Image: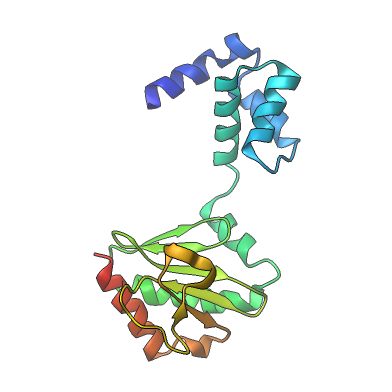
Length: 180
């Protein structure tokens, strides 16, 4: 797939009239809510074929955000929650060298072989911590997964750094152990 993509990028100036960088520059001046809107714009306004339009839009999105940007964007207006996030991260990283932190647009996945924790700033005053603990019963504190659906089995709502206590750390460690 890499070779085909590189060939497509190399052929772009000849086939579309512009280089990938020139197309990225054009797209950077527009704000499309959906991938298909960008593709349709290139097809209709610039006569680019579907294959090239799809590739251009995909590649222009990939470079938009670094992991740090994704996390800082999640905590804009929710800065008081950031110390809680940092403590959760420090806690799960201490479980082992096989922990991978993967920021996404609205949450951060913590993965061993599988995701075992999901960190999401849900409101200005609360982080929802998703846990993958199959077969574990819910309690008042260890609630059902709620908006996480099947990504997690449970959710703990965290409003203070003090909520990261031995009980919560135990649940995160258990989820880590089950994710091997």
